[in-house]
Length: 402
Image (cartoon, rainbow, N blue to C red; front, side):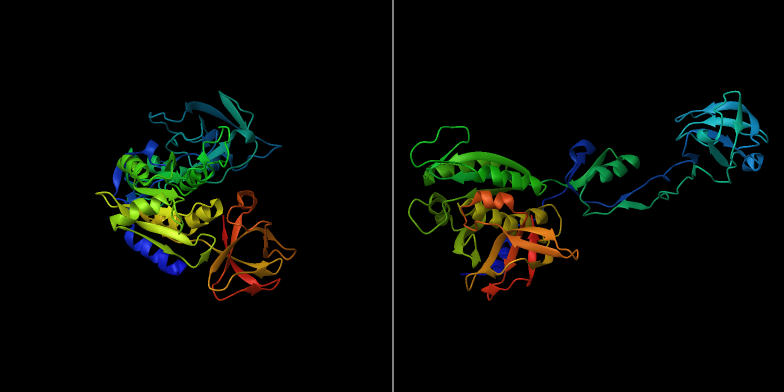
C-alpha cells in the first residue's frame, strides 16, 4: 500500500492550474484573480460628504451649542452626483447629501441631526471641527495602488472593489468544471421505487455538492450500470465539458468493477490501495486527448466523501490557482480512540469547545464506511496516524474541519 501523502503528491504533480481568461464581473464570482489590479484614480476621487447635513466653515460654527445655536443662511443644495461647482462663503451654509462633492471653502459637515433641518436658514446646535464628516480624496486608496493581488479568490467584496476602480472585466482562473459519475447496478435515482437489492444513489449528490462547496462547477451525470463499455461511452460524452472527472464505485478487488475494467487498459490511470481508513481502494490518472484528471473513488459513501476531502479538494484548489492545502486544527479527544495498525484513520466526529475554551473532538456513533447518517452528523475528521492504534481521552489530535 502507498501512503496518503504519496497519493496526494502524485495527484498534485499531475493536476495543472487552469489557464486564465477574461470574464465579465457578473461571471467572476468564485474564480481566482490572475492579475494584480491597480486603481486608475484616487478612491474616493474627490472630497465628499460622509453624512447628510450642511457644509460649513468650521470657524462659523465654533460657538454653536444646544442652548445657543448658530443660525446660518442656506445658499445652495448639493446632491450626490451633482457636477456643478459650489462654494461656501463666510457665514453661510450649503445643504449637502451623503456622497456629494464638498463645496469650495467648506471644511466641515454638520450632520442634519445637530440642526433644525432648515432649508433657507439652519440653526446649528453643535460645533464641527475642520474635517468633520468629510471623506478625503484618496483616503481609501491612492492613485496607482494595487487593490487586489493575483491569487485572490473573488468574493462579493472583491467584486465590489473591481467595480469600484472601474473594471468591467477581470483576468481570472475559472472555476473548474467537474463531472460526477456514480457506478453500480444496484443504484437507482432518488424518488424512484426501490426494487429487490437496490439502493438510492447518494454518492453523486454528495460529491457534486462537495465540488460546488469547494468553489468549482459540479455537473452530476447520474448513474452508470456495471458495464465497462457503457461507462466508457458515458465518460467520453462527458469529457467535452470537464476539467476533471470524479467517479464513485467500481474500483475494488472483486468482480463487476466497471471503472477499473474500463480505465485499467488505457495505461493512464493507476489503481492501488492507499493506507487509509476509510477509502483504501483509489484510482487516479488522466483520460482523453486533453489529459483530463480523473479521480476514481471507492463506492462506499463515507469512503468516497473522505477521499474527496483528502485528494480531490486540494487538487481543485490547485486548478483554481489556490494553495492546495488541507486546513487542520488541534483539539483534544473527549473519549479514548482506537485505530487499525498501518493505516491513517479519519474518524468522523463533532468539534466543540470545552469549559476552558479549548477545542474538543468527540467521535460520532457509527464509524462504518457505509454509515452516511453518521457522516451527516459529523463536522470534523479526526486524523489518527498510521503508527498509532490507541489514543487516551484528552490526547491532542489533528482535526480536519468539514
